Structure formats: C-alpha cells, structure tokens
Image (cartoon, rainbow, N blue to C red; front, side, top):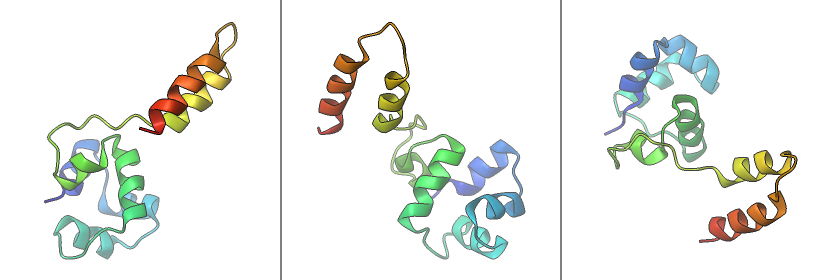
Length: 99
C-alpha cells in the first residue's frame, strides 16, 4: 500500500503538478498511485519531503505521518545560530546520527 494519491489529494495537488515537481510523466504518477509500478528509492525520499511525511508512512509501513528528523538539517540550522553553544549541540547531533 502507498499513500501517494491520498496525500496528493489532501494537499490539493493535481497529478500534473506532482509529475512536474517530481520530474516524471503524469502516467508515472498514475502507475505509482495504482501500485502498478514501484517508485524508485530516491523518488520516495523526494515524495516524503514534498508531503512532509516519513517514507515509512508513505509506503504504508507506519501510521505515524511525522517525518523522521533530518539530522543534517539540524546541524546546518544550529551552525548559523549565534550566542549558543552550537559546537556542543553539533557533537551531540553527530553522535545521535551515528546510532
């Protein structure tokens, strides 16, 4: 099961709009939504980011639509903060990322 169609409709996006964003044809979107062809791994990540959900939710493996925390984004955000011990936080985040 995948949730592409459900999420697309919730967001109010047309198949053409999603196809353009993803760099694929509308026919590809139809196949993805009907589960008649598989989405490539790199495309799942892009879809998950677009809909702001986890890949597991998108694939139907999880009922939680909360996206997984992107540690690289956290590090980037912390590195530009001023008046904060961001070096210590980056160390903690890097250690967490390795888990």
